[in-house]
Image (cartoon, rainbow, N blue to C red; front, side, top):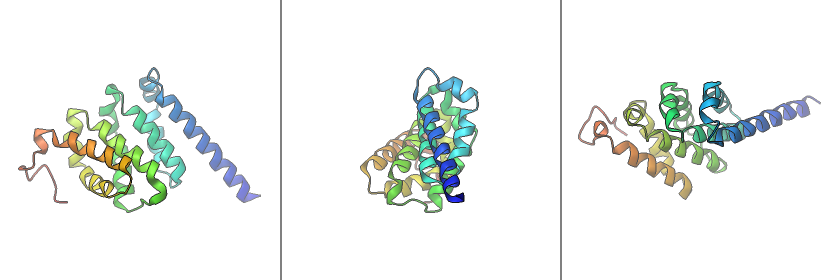
Length: 169
């Protein structure tokens, strides 16, 4: 009985997270969703250990990261970057995580489009995560990772000759 109750609660949480992801994908609702606590909720859900829920939560973050008005907020809250660096940095990725890693790589690339975020993401240690992600076999993970590298490297503050900007990898 207890096992089925836990599984039922997990499935409810997964379905609720998927519903939030659908709301976040709607262009008309993105900003209002964020104003109502959507980013914080997505961060909380992304911090859970359940890969399916974490994947849906990063889907929310990825959808929100497309909106120009939200790109800065996603970095300023810093929970997004912390969860990414913790997950990737702890070597938690495996073959079953491809969709999650795609969501993470695309989220990083999307938020890297904001000029201030480019510098802060590097300072927060995102390059180590991108190096790890680019080693994944999936072409889709590599595509998002490459786009993030291109965007981050386009900032003069992240120029290769500036030893203070880019930590050793």
